[in-house]
Length: 83
Figure 1 (cartoon, rainbow, N blue to C red):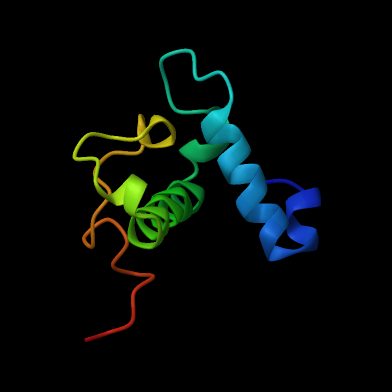
Figure 2 (cartoon, helix red, strand yellow):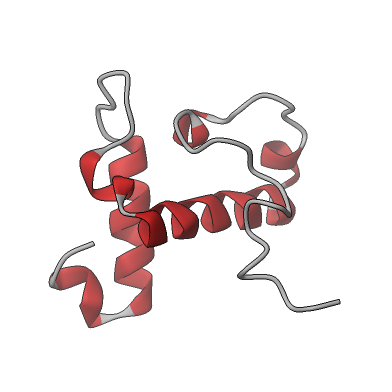
């Protein structure tokens, strides 16, 4: 995301989620238009759905997923271990 987010992996995750929770103005935040950051944001959303039942029960996009597209195994295949 930026120089600060490169200091530690958890800071990178925090900056991505910060952008997803900020004012969206009806579109994807500008920094997340970079393909690799968008892919990471989808992966984090997938993991949240897997780890927290309250997130996984929703069939509609959660607030932070509004502009990410589908959140499923296909969207995060490059991050998942090979079967």
